[in-house]
Length: 385
View (cartoon, rainbow, N blue to C red):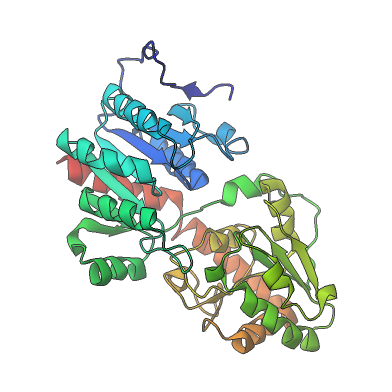
């Protein structure tokens, strides 16, 4: 953490901060998940002369902490277990940090049950609050009471809500009766790209038969449909390898579905950025057979490695996957259509390369952090006025 401007809460007080301001806008960015996304947003805001206090959890931070801009004030905290009463003390320390930083905008990334109780206090003291709902509606299999309650308070006490797509905006309006004027759609951005790209190996070659499923394994990810598609794929493309990389729920239920085990390579554990970079580089395409989704950082990571994607028509994913340009969109829960799309790309290297380049171009234009931070700062300014 050398070179970082670490700003740690202590019982005996705080380190004295400079009176000089980089700008007139002080933003406290909270992260309880999505650390990589929040850090990249903070860096982009800082480059546009916004004073940023970044409050971020310590877990999984080792590979990311050195990427934080040196102008950002950073508070790293250890997050207690959900039902640990030390959470109350933690939230009180957050409130003190916000006050000491002379915060104008409190911007929260990802829900945190205990912080929900602090939202009315923030509003009482006239702070402007923005909540980014990366998942405005719980996924299939994740409809926990604490999640619904946290989302409810987030909607109730926020001045603006950010979501990653028009479909997510529609959900907030139609299912939660949330006022449209308080919703801002923001692209998901180059989420996760740089932490992986820095481990890219110069001479590592792509394997034309590697198909990558990457990320957390949960019911809504639709992995069972990819497994069902394998016999159809291997019949047309001998030697195909379906690479499954990630962890989540009990994997045995998926192993029981596998017909041809020799056609699978399974990494059922936490995937580091270094290991992930190698998997993306070696793969010829990335597949997202999801049956439910909001957005996906896997898509933009694939774009960062110039890989085309095969994804399902769920959530706001089709808003960042241009069908037949950066990838192929197929219906959810249809393993036949999924297999056909994968076969099409595996058989056509020129098409894969063209789609991969188009995805990379989209990443650096429509999904760029420069564009996202510009929109975000304009919303900040409107709230302050």
